[in-house]
Structure formats: C-alpha cells, structure tokens
Image (tube, rainbow, N blue to C red; front, side, top):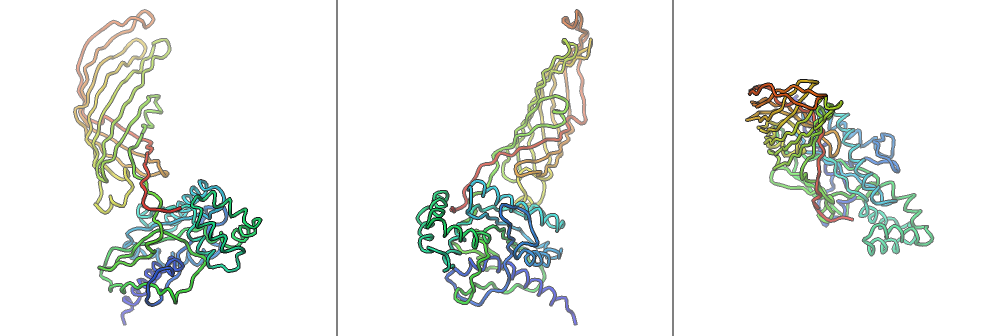
Length: 435
C-alpha cells in the first residue's frame, strides 16, 4: 500500500486546521453557519513587560509543538507565501510604551522562527505589531459575569475612545476593585502574538478541502485568544476569511521616502561623505553621493582636499515575486554611475591639483537589513576615469607653490569600493481604524 498520499493529506489537514484555528474566539462573533472548524490557536503568550518567547509560560509549549509539526517539513514550507506575526500588549500602563513592546514581541517571534527554522525565507516573515488590544479586552469583559461592575466597565470603554482617559476612569471605578480584577484575571490573555501562515502556491498534491465557515452557535468561546486584522486564505477560486471584517486592520504600514547613507571606509579615513537614495517602486532607485574632505594638516605640510559628487541609477535583481516580498533597498543590484570633482593632494613638498570625471561606470552591490530602519550595503564599481592635473612643489614653509608640469591621466578599472551604513526614512500610511 502507498502511504504517501495519506501522509500528505494529514499534513495538509494539519496546516489548514492551524490556519482556521488561529482565532476561534474572534471567529465566533461572525454571523455565519456551518460545521465546526478543527484546529488549535497558534498564539504565543508573553509574561508581563517581557518580549521573550517562553516555552514554559501558559500554553506556549503546545503552540510551539504545532509550529514544529508544520515548519520542520521543507516540502510544506516551500509553499508558504508569507508568515504574518500579529503582536499585542495589554491596555495597562503607558500607551507609547505598549506600542513599542508589541513591536518587540513580533520581532522576538520572527527571530525565534528564523533561528529555529533556518530554511524559512526570512523576507516572507512580516512582524505586524497591533499595539494595545482593547477590542479583545472588551470581549473578555463582556463574557466574564464575575467581574464587579461589569456593565459600568463596558460603558466606560465604549464611551471613551481616548485610551489614556479610559484607563484613568477604570482605575477610579469602585475604588479600583474592577480594575484589580481585570489586572489579575484578564490582562495576561492580551499579551500575545498570533502567527498566521498564508498558503498560495499550489502543487501536485490532492486538492485542499473547500473552506468552511464556523458555526457561531456551536463554537465555544475561548478567553486566551488575540484580536487581529483581516487576513484571508485562498484555495482555488474560494476565499476564506480568517478574521471578521469588523476587526481593525493594522494601524499603519511604513513606506520608505528615501535613505541616508555614509561610506564607512571613507569615514575611517576621515573623509566626510553623504549619500541619498530614493526608491522608485520595487525595482529601481536613484543614488546621489557627495564627498567633501577639506583638510590642511601640520602647517600646510599635508593636504587632503576633495570635492566630489555623482549619480547612480540602480536596478534591483530577483524575480517579481521575490521583489514584492522583499523589503525595499535590500538584495542584489546592478548600477550605472557617473560623477566628477576636483582635488588638491599634497604630501610634504610634492602635490597635485586638478579636476576629474568618471565618464561611465558599472557597479554591483548587495544590501541587507541589520535593524528595523538600518541596512548595510556593499558596493564595488568599475569605470573609466579621466583627470587633468598640475604637479607642484611647495616652498617657503609650504606657503609658495612652484608649478612643475601639467598632464592628463586616464584609468579604467575599479573606481569605487563602499561599505555603507544606510538609514531608511519612512512615512506611515494608515491601513485601517483601531484604538
């Protein structure tokens, strides 16, 4: 008997069950009917004020085992289009701090996945911090009849869209009894990150079962779930919403305006420089550079004076799908550049002054992310350089220049080598509502 189709079918059923079971508590709010949806929520919980994946905390051990079953199989992970990590913080304390904490939690989960499963494409793993989880808190409060002054608490949340004012009023309600109950019983369920895996690549395996919608009357509400943005799973021509349409989407996404860069090799040689790169879509970018060391050292005995500028057009390599899933200004690229400037270089009595230009050059480079808005870029260029120079000798304690000869020089070969630190400046684009 051939057991291979059975094994594949079980794996597909497991992955589909994990997808459909990310948020059963949220799905139970939909006005839809159908059979129950199998699967367990892929939600990781965090300790108070922590952003560390802790296997021993709450139900994390079970969630990590499910992830192991799914992501350890290279044949299945090769079909993953993207992994979205939706992270949250409880509405307790400073709002700005909680937003940063949610960001740190999604980054921690991504780091865990990249470390644990090195065969995953890290550029398909997307942290999606959501901030304070007020909607899920309200749902938990509405379902907990033991909470003191439950109706007053719900009215306070509904009537005060300002989260800071809402927190203040909740702490004052009934001398703080209601808020102490919320802190002790409910808030721990809101410090989490939900891992949602989206499959889009078909293969030769048997077709996936048609998507079903959960039955609101039959599905049990769970208190340990997260409220997340709207995501859908596509199979053939059918689309299955994993999250209800009323759930707010991610508060914002970031789109790069431009990048500011400096060549670390020039910096180490005390040669100030700056570059600005502007992305044009996912494939193209324009890079401008300016170098301006202008030093006279040891009583005019040594001179390092260079003014140089240049422009480069870049084409970022990779398939269309690869570029769509990569962060902007990362990966391999080819460039065409040109530039020029003037110089005065002197070492003791001998010196050269002149102007130069690079008629044309071809470059190759690679850039990768080292932090949220930081990149490291490596770049080498080969081109044609031509300069007109004047040779001189310095006299009278380096105050008089005696001109010796004029000349021209042409060079074809490497004209630039860079290891650049890149700082990406973004603008926020709102994607939907949310507290």
